[in-house]
Length: 84
Image 1 (spheres, rainbow, N blue to C red):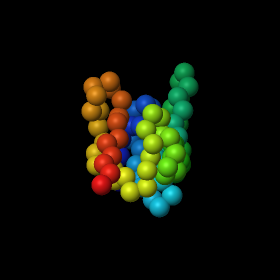
Image 2: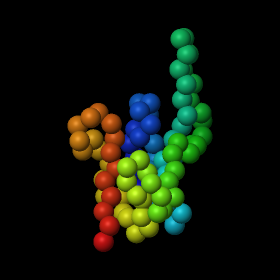
Image 3: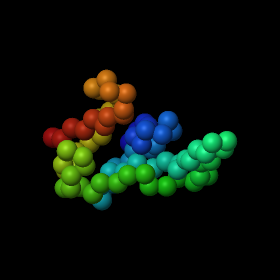
């Protein structure tokens, strides 16, 4: 478990693992020309069930979240997993 701006909104999300898969929980935020609003509760921003594709990577049961950060220098949050 950890946190990071996985949606690119400038707001951190909570990254969780479960028996079902992995997910990102955070607040949905919207910005208008003269206003900014975020939901007061957490909502699912992204989810991936184990043994399905998450982008170009296959999320496998038994994978453990090792770190969260910008590992490749592109300015976006990356998730680092390892599998024994």
